[in-house]
Length: 188
Image 1: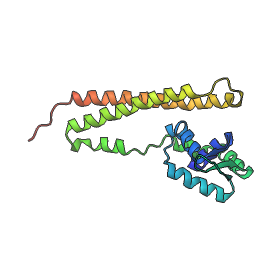
Image 2 (image 1 turned 90 degrees about the horizontal axis):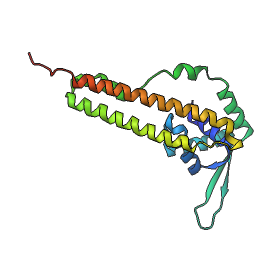
Image 3 (image 1 turned 90 degrees about the vertical axis):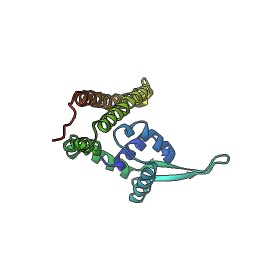
Image 4 (image 1 turned 60 degrees about the vertical axis):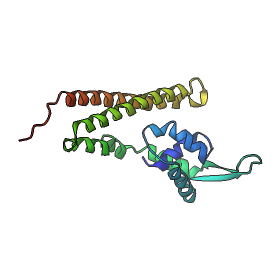
């Protein structure tokens, strides 16, 4: 997935400002696709140049002016073409690129206490992610006709995130137990 396609998908639901889009992105797609606000605004400009969306400047008296983005027919076509051809994404879904795991791989070069601290911190982050995902699931609209079908898929991705984080916690617990039971290094 490219960031552009995620933004197009969100804008297909309704027009939004860059600020609103950033907030919605972080509360939904942000659980499995990281993007900074500056990246989002950069992509919006790029997509507007491609004709995938338009923007309208809305003047406000007591608040700063805002820019509202709307997907064009060309943008909807791009989004539908992308969503209809997932083959490359399926193959890439199992690829892992993790600086964290690389650090663990080489942790035999550091004191065990440092690695245990790293693993415990990782576990805490995963626990916090589960709490955040649970909160996000509560925000998924149920019973709203406009989002009934989409809500099923939103819940599926939230469930994936929850299961993945529980698996990470299970792995971290096992790794911590292994290291805690590891005999101290002896010098020859």
